[in-house]
Length: 398
Image (cartoon, rainbow, N blue to C red):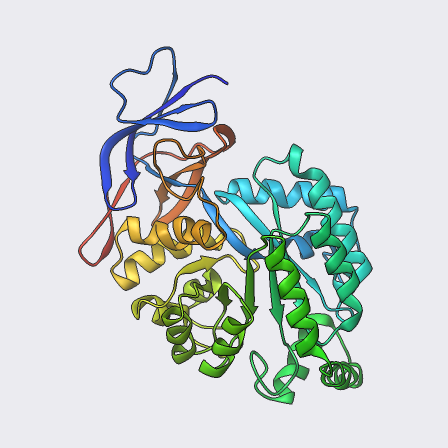
């Protein structure tokens, strides 16, 4: 692989920003920062743009809409996987965890047999991908029929992250029955009668769920698969999940729960769309409040890949973070949470997963993405601005 020298960049290191810095890429790795010599390396002049680690996105279900853009309209899965791969490269996400749900009664792509087929399509595409595509399996604990599928996929080494979720009405994301009915009618196109039947089935399916969760989490741990609990809503729930060996908390719905997770050394994962919109779609905690309180470990794009880089910069501006701290939310901390010690920072010896960011009309936009040292995305914006963080947040200057 040809060596590449990235020059004239604002290099975001784990604890500082190197002004007008240079990074050398060789053989897919970061070979040097501020190299004394670069030999015959091809130079890429970033003209003052921000150079950050490639983003690590632990939860994004955008692949579901690529596979099923309209209800019961399925595209060929190899086509869908290729499209979401390109979307992630353009969004600067060099390590996406495609969140795929086993929730048999929900819309088409979440049918157990269908989602298992989609997971196999992602796995088959990995060697062709622009980015390092990984699988996050989400298990709806009220569905006993999903267990054989998930156990088989774990045994086959196709699961990179497993989360357990309870979307039954009356707790978690759906604090009331009406909230659940409104969601499934609006999101899945169900009639009220169909939504009520789905609610009854979900509640009935909770019988035996505790044993299923314990069994599945134990298998995942034995296979070295990181695990998460979803929509934790109380300190008691955090304690229960921690006792089962869960290693992170996804979308804790209030500040007390997030604080409990962090106090138990469970990294928390919050949604980038929540940061951008300033609110949760389900009325749960605002992500920016968790960031300000120091109990947000990671941001994920949730359902829209393009939000992740935007939320990192918004967090810097709104919570007074440095660029290094904002980068940790979307790269370093997620990588650490999943045991990926070869990425997430700009450090000599790590994978050359890197992104260049240009601030255009006040918006942080990815101009280049390198995945394992390969340039997999490039867009040429007029370079008329430079961005830097300091004091209260992000300042953009001409």
